[in-house]
Image (tube, rainbow, N blue to C red; front, side, top):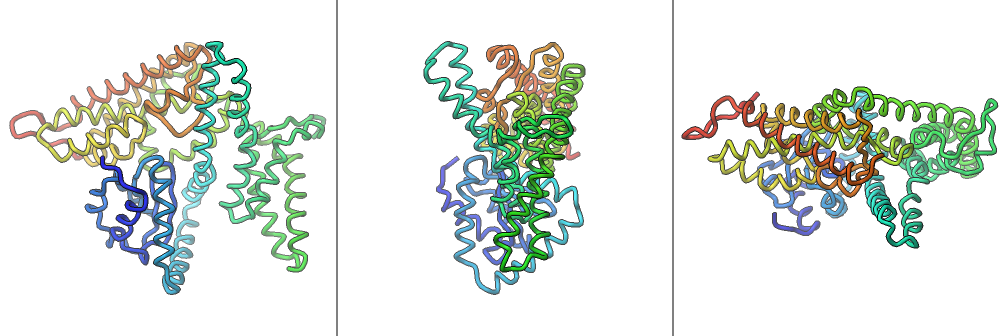
Length: 470
């Protein structure tokens, strides 16, 4: 793929989605530029897909999503927003405001979808720091095991652990921002959870522990703080607002956090960790089969981001999440299925070109190009890709039943990109070997299932064949 600058990519995308007047909102996640559009008929989709930086497009009820890949989307989005700002007029702003109000009313009619989107908006911005700190933690663990650079490892441990020690503050900040409160007040009430002095607070005869409740407690505290802040602003005189509102927000929310939320969220966090461990220790192969097999549909629907708080909670408690390596097997099944399509449709130059361009991203865990460009449009290969993910998940889950846990110290990457973040209870070498075995299983089963059952006729017969359009 030819590399293009973020500005060039943004400049090329804007007219193809109908120009500034057609864009009502801009956001991005790890891989996608998410646009709210007034009129989707103005989108020149074929030309958009032909851009070198565009890996695919996804349209749901609320947003039009352009898949650019990790890293690229974070650089293109500010350039795109700058182009929009330069082309904004007063009339456009008025129309945009009306459009946003209408979109808000529509979103309020689907509470679950709105909640999942908000959870993603809170946690997705934290992923780069989680990845960076996770890689450093993995490197530090390797140095410790090899007894190398003993004078450096304490410094690396501090760098890797600092963010996780204060992650509750960042969650609180983002939560208040997402729910319409003052972000710094959200961070302030969430900071109560990680403050060492809470160890001197006794609640119902029990002493609190710093960090008790973790990110779930921080989310609840900041959400409550936002409600209290809005309530205060509804009756506090404007002349006293700057003094009274922040004070009451922090005081009232802080007391509820100490005397209720930390305990409740702590119990919930422990239940999540206990349930995940029990599930994999007792039903590991079956659990892996189900999780690995269903994850591609979750990615397709965008619902996979709802798992981020669970991953983060497990990382806080255990140092790694045991769920992510299993879920990553879905990508392996997708890669295997794409390889089978490439082999069977040897006369279809167009789809083989798509697979060649999307496969490297798929190997690194970015599955959207293969999902939306290959398996989902063909129908049956999407199902056989899920079968490959189920097989890989069952493989990793089986070893969890045998006592060999495979985890990730951060969230975000999968596929081959997950190797630097792997951790477990049996040593890095065994952990990496199990994970690699899961990937190979996913590749193989995804390939064989697609080759055997992904087509309605023999695609390698003279003249080719037609894949199932299930």
